[in-house]
Amino acid sequence: METNEMETLERLKKLAAIHFRTLKPANSESKNYIAQIEVLNYFELGCIITDMLKLCILALDHDIHNVPEKKNQSINVGLILETVLSIFPLDEIEFLGYVREVVGE
Image 1 (cartoon, rainbow, N blue to C red):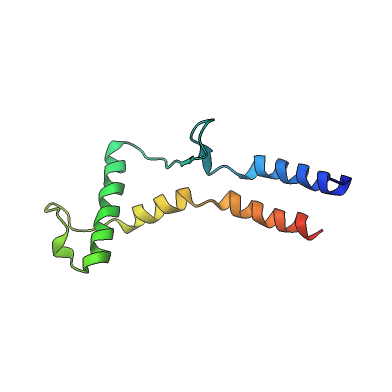
Image 2: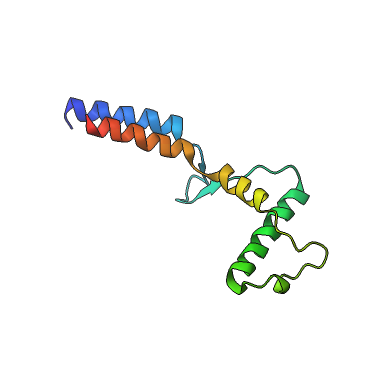
């Protein structure tokens, strides 16, 4: 590689180390990654999971009466959106902007 390409590669590696935070390696032997969400406790995790399942059921059946929970038929869409937002890879998207700048040079 010529010097300019090596400098570009080093800049990209430094930027990747700073901005690639959403996915963590599962282990050293695997090519899989883990995306984590933060929850207050098991109850909040349970609410997130059940609301996601209810939302999927509604999307498939378009009928709230098929949701198998008698106590509370409502879906906490805000909680679902907060969860999705927490795993949205904004740092990585910012990094892609930097990559475009470096490659565009």
